[in-house]
Length: 119
Length: 112
Image 1 (cartoon, chains in turn red, blue):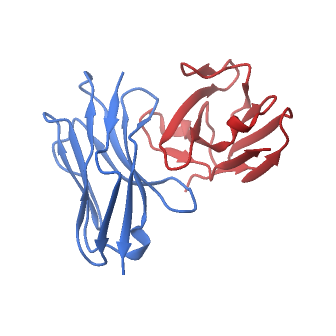
Image 2: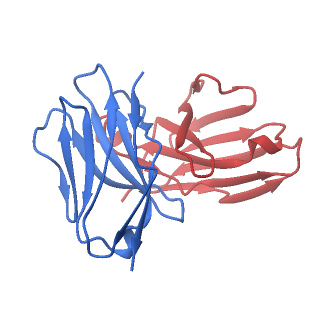
């Protein structure tokens, strides 16, 4: 089945540094990937939609200069948390849809998530 | 904007029993999709079941079935013969465009 690989699975960084999270579709191509944020015991909140070859679309309230998204190929999207602060500590999850299915309503495939801790 | 509501933050049930998780949603769309996702302690999101709004027949996947009431905008998940491995967070989700909107989740615990 379709696999989405997310790396790293966990990262600890110091306040003020930047962290890059990768999301790869391993056996399918994805023109669109989605980035979510999940706080402890809460739901997944969509942060942005990553579009291959174009700018990402951010949800209301998400700082695009804080959370940089790059989708340079059909199999890779990256999320960079710039100048991270403790309040950015969270669980980040990416998902992708197999464009080969021809429908935007085909099921999403999720990565395993990245736990970010900013000290 | 669509909203998804799960009114049961936590539930627990004895192993082998049946449990029903509730979900309601609000939308003005006529064509959409509904999903139930499971998130075990590993945090991996796992698709449990999917329902197309244009289909009147309720979706089933082995021990999992839904009760889809379009007029009432209700989409409940029934888990039969519950197993210890069913312990997880369960999220109801709505999709009418390419985006997925999740409910707040129900933490389900299966008691041995």
